Image 1 (cartoon, rainbow, N blue to C red):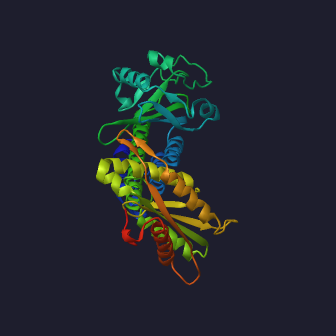
Image 2 (cartoon, helix red, strand yellow):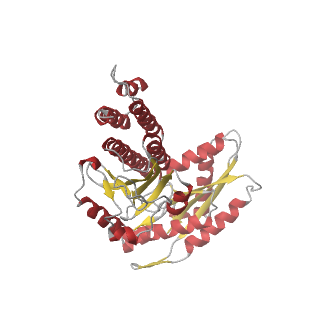
Image 3 (cartoon, rainbow, N blue to C red):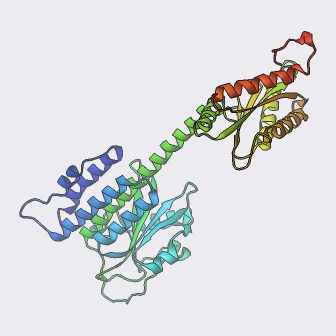
Length: 402
């Protein structure tokens, strides 16, 4: 297996490209072609396992599944019969997220959280050792050199015979492959135990294990990058559909949900709310006081609605609620909801900027077959204006808002 590391290096480069975009299977197969006249079964088997792991990593965005695939690949391609992967949490602690090869090891280790400072001190001590070249980038903890941090943290100790042979694997031996990001950050560790032949691994076996650790590190980076992109996309979608001041849905989302409900053929009602006296709060106490009122009243209105209802801020001091009418819920729920909204909007709002009181004009409407959601919203809007006019003297104007 002398040329294994160099040839598999090409596979790693193909895998890195696969993270950025699909790589044809023929390209991966080309990377694992063994030159004529040098067919070594162990090399071919190991390369095939690496190819399979590459495909699994690229096909799955689930980090747990991906790391399980890497751990199983180590079992298949190396002499080790127990494989464990630790991931570093944002807090700095390390969590055991994958254990393959031993039910006893899985029961003892999976889900275990190890203090980050303890594990980092242990890895630093192991790195200071003077070891022979076989280990490469791996960190070997021999039973003769037992860092105190190893004793302080629970580990899996296999039940195996102890030999005086210096090349024999000892039950207290441990081998770690650090998972390092391209930028040099420690992401976790891949550790192995219990070699099937009972002996310390060869230089080639150590090199192969280091390559699998590179796979695991890339998988972690890939999954985290994908999760970050998805989270950013969700944030952008939420921002485009919600009012930044109150956190309520905005008019665009209101219209979308209402149109979806109409298209689905389900009953739907609408309640429109327009605050009374809100302009006076802004004019007298300033816009920050007005923002306080809007935030508090938005929370109250949301509390009045059911989980399946959508409460939206549609304008400066204008709100609307989309009310699905199904499951035994009929139009009779709308007047009751309108009364609750009037009541909570008329209760005083107290903040460090003072105590303010407004009111609310409310209108309701029920979707009728042959109309649209937009027309239903307009009917509720007209009903709200009628409610507002009923509170004014004729000289105040019929459609002014305050």
